[in-house]
Figure 1: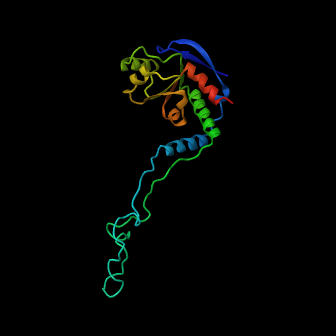
Figure 2 (figure 1 turned 60 degrees about the horizontal axis):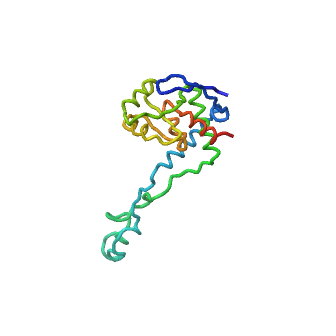
Figure 3 (figure 1 turned 180 degrees about the vertical axis):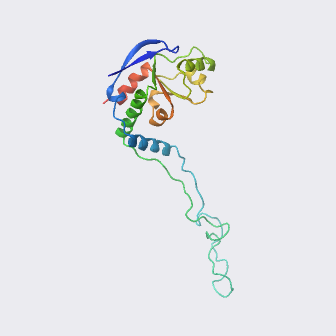
Length: 207
């Protein structure tokens, strides 16, 4: 098993934690990470783009002029896509961009992303990330101890003081262990895990 130091917010070692090798030490397959990240980003697309086709354009269905004898080109309805104000041919319509990814593949990708952070020494385990009060200054001071600027912080439970203190700090995201995902892990340079959150993650992803 991999053993990591557990720090407090002053970056003082307080204990150690053993990481499950089935979660934090697995083979990394880039194509699996890519597949899951693409699916996750696709799911964020709204898919609400829409245009009116000729059936949706409001107007008379009468023929504008007779077929022959006028010297002009033959014509049908005013809603024809070839006329100004007519419907749009082959325009966008509301759709879902969701991509189905098997649960086992999503879990596997999470293990790979966590393994990558361990191998790159970008994972810190924090004993407790609770702040005494809502104050951005205190949060920034804690981040400066670890010399990080772009970080994902994963907590065991909801922490209002931490979430509000970090809200105005750019490139910092706080979430609970239930919301952990591949995209956010890979997007941020550093990953902070609360000691109790490590147990939850290993329980959820352990084989």
